[in-house]
Length: 144
Image (cartoon, rainbow, N blue to C red; front, top):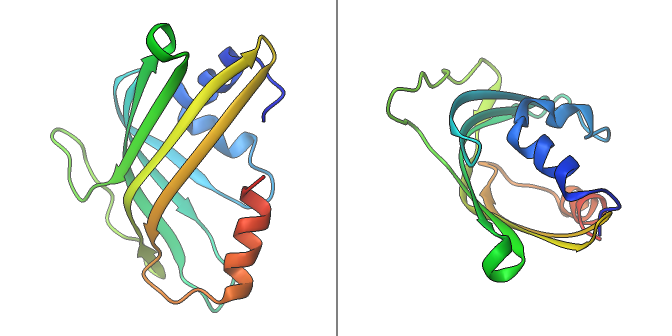
């Protein structure tokens, strides 16, 4: 549950390069590589990690679907891509590993004018072994 108007959350999604301004528990870099429409973007994201881990980056093909009139919700679907037409995909930087998002999705459902239910799932290959302590931290930090 997010205590905010739907328009505030949608503004952050549409202007994805603002995502680092509200994620304060990790450093994250987000660049919009291509904005086909407010509902379809190609994004570059990078998370600097402490030594001895390599940073992780990903190119994301994200699409949103406005189903408010039909089902009272907005759905977002995303996968990682290696290429996309008319889009310059950055090379993998040194000391960085490109992860793979097999499938990710989110459901945004307004409950009241100032309260939103957000449900998100992701199937991600981090391209390395993750210790259980890291998985537990992610689960405690990102899941409610």
